[in-house]
Amino acid sequence: MVFAVVLSLVGGIATVPFVALGPGPTFDTLGRVDGKPVVAIEGERTYPTTGRLNMTTVSVVDGITLFGALGFWLSGRNALVPRDEVFPPNLSEAEIERRNTELFQDSESTAESAALRYLGYPSEPIVEGVEDGAAADGRLEPGDDLVAVGGIPMSSARQVVAELADNAPGDTVEIGYRRGDGPPQTVPVTLAPGSEPGRGYLGIRVTDRAAVDFEITISLTDVGGPSAGLMFALSIVDKLTPGPLADDTFVAGTGEIATGGEVGPIGGIGFKMLKADEAGATVFLVPTDNCAEALSRAPEGLRLIRVATLGEAVDALEAMRDGVPTPRC
Image (cartoon, rainbow, N blue to C red):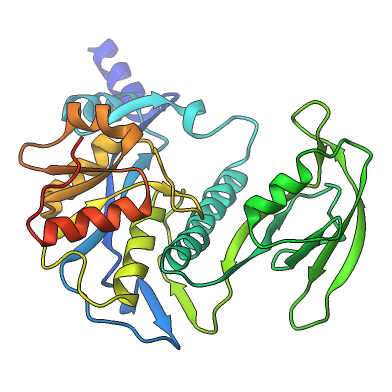
């Protein structure tokens, strides 16, 4: 009896070094959350949309007890993974939360850039972030337009990265930039050593920002990570083009997106498909590199569409709308 009492106390109080992963909330990027449009566009003509384009998430439960872990394991809906895989021990909880928030914000801005580039709007490279103590710290700021590198005019983030690639640590590079509505300026920056031997490091994150006179706002809080990029980009494309992409179909999906429109793989796709199926989705957009896992874990009846780029995702949805076969995992 004493052993049973002790076991029950320990099992109900003592935590284990694991977290439980499971299906997280899903949000319609064409809809509203807390009364606000998830994706709002002001200053440009938009078109009516129908159906749903849901982004999906993975829930993380921390601080679980021994009995709690057993319950999650028996549920069949969750997976237990070592806590260090989700919460690196060298980072504080505040740092982890800030990093996840930054990844989500990056996915928003990248989705906007990818969608507007796909639609043919002009874009320009900007400084998205500056690392503390890096070569560019104190010289460049987030939001600066990158006008030139070494005297060569810049038109994309990819061009900026390519132009800096051949420089070594100790090289001084003239960076042309524009801050706000001010005139173009030039600042010399001496590159520091980076993670790649022999390559100079500026210490900034660069992305493409659409050079447009209208505003896109994505309003979704308490969500982290980069995997919503594809669905945000599709929502923007859907609202800025005539003819609804989803066409009364409940479409869900996931995928990290690059400014060039490439769709990258993500984690937890099994949990995301499960939640989408439970919410009523009949179609799920799967990054190409996630197809093998998705096929092995897809709920029965959920149609999987394989996508490698934003353009492929748009084409697939239009084909589905027109009754034409779509790429499948």
